[in-house]
Image (cartoon, rainbow, N blue to C red; front, side):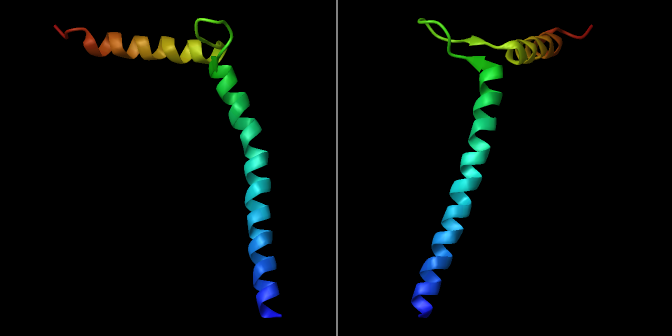
Length: 69
C-alpha cells in the first residue's frame, strides 16, 4: 500500500513539472521570436526587440573602444 502511494506521489510531482514546463515554453518561444526570427533561407534576422539590443550593444562597444583624451 505504501509503495502505491509513493509511486503515485512521484507521478504527481512529475506531472507538475510537465505542466509547468509546458506552460513556460510558449512564453520562451514567443520572446525568442521577438528577438530573433528564422525567416528566410540564408539565415535569420533580428526582430524588433533584437534590433534594439544590437543597437545598444553597438553603442556600448563604440563608447568603450574610443580612446579617452
